[in-house]
Length: 268
Image 1 (cartoon, one colour):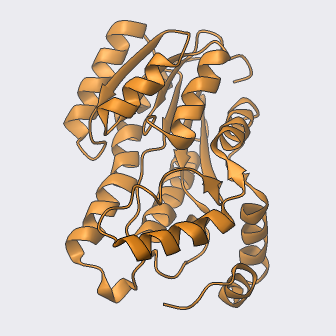
Image 2 (tube, rainbow, N blue to C red; image 1 turned 180 degrees about the vertical axis):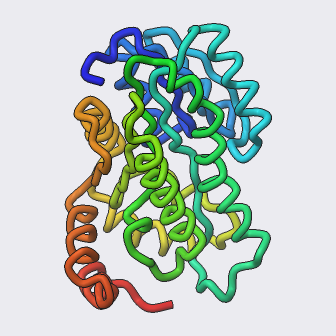
């Protein structure tokens, strides 16, 4: 999808971070954008910062009925959908897997995994109608490796990767390019938006995350867009992502020792 002019791009989680930057850069490239976020105010800020055609709706992507209504409204306004980026997601305060409640675990999966499934299956029939189309699902480097203290998030991102790769195999003869995106440390507000942490723990985790976050959201969005234009099946963002991808391929049964050593991570 080299030419993005007049293409219609749907982006979830567009109120901040990578989602907001994707909206901005795709709009600047000539695309018409349809945006979602759970929170109305930041979504409106994104929409108002764009110069091109935009449609936006605030809702939770775990609600499939809301996504279907969103699809209908996008089609009514723009008449087509060429690109879908399932980007919405969140994480929990760092805790060992055995300390996480079932309710919290389910909530992460509902948004991070089922939100991607709903966004994909809702728009898939429309993508099939286009001469060329793209379906981009945002996983993570934590969808390549298991990571201590972020169990539900990692599980959800492994699931996103598996879902995307399975679709790519099943629909390999269609006009759709399926892309799984694996960002490393990105300078976004995902950690600062975590609820349920006391101030000291939140500050400590934020500082640890900031040490790992070496890529800006704008840089990440640019890499994703190049991946869309080049029809890449997998996009790795950042030196840390490329490093992690390499070591888990070379040492699939022992990579965790290297991860702990190179990223100065304490076991939970």
